[in-house]
Image (cartoon, rainbow, N blue to C red; front, side, top):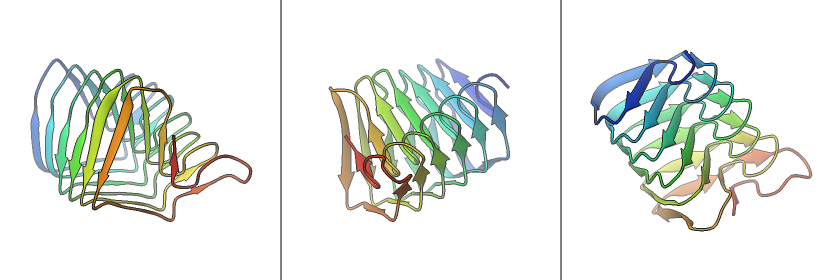
Length: 170
């Protein structure tokens, strides 16, 4: 698919429970899921081994605010930014009791965030992700962008030698 290898949400609010989105490919953004002005709710969802050529190996959010709980993002890749998740243009993601591990990108091995919005990660683990450039774990690019980490482990994320910030790049 061009956008959202498994699922593309346009101005919608789907609820997914006990679902796996795995081994999907998007030529552009959102290897597993693409959200445009949407408010999806994910509970006990696994996004694994998805690929996006551009942004968001597992999930791409554009003016969207997903609520994610008890979920896993693992083994997702993108050639550009946001191995697991790319949050853009005032997207505000709420993630709780979830893990984001083993994802790969050039920027933001786990998460890439730009152009406003407030992300919150509560009781999460963001570990073992890789960026070949900046921010092995989390990379925030612009001002007016907030990432709240509450009781969240950000550990063991790596980056290529000479680039900036293994775990968090602001």
